[in-house]
Image (cartoon, rainbow, N blue to C red; front, side, top):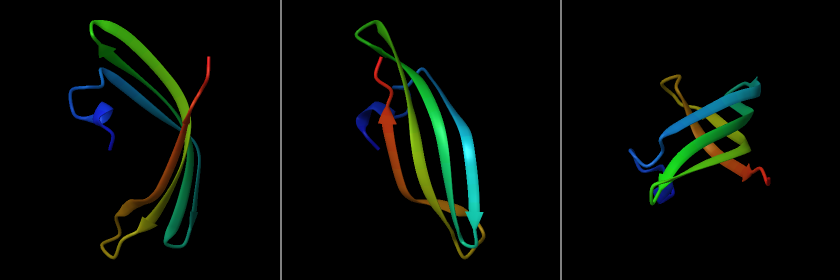
Length: 74
């Protein structure tokens, strides 16, 4: 992940699923996100949307296979 997501660098983050579709051992999720960071004492709020593709593992867990996100432009 980019350096901005190193633990402790994000003050708060919310991911809100909009749609989740499961098709066998594959799934995709459309979601929105927002997070706050503090840079040089200044609070920055960022919002965006994402499309994530997951693949079921042999132990039944799900892992990211691909992920794409875009930031909303104010």
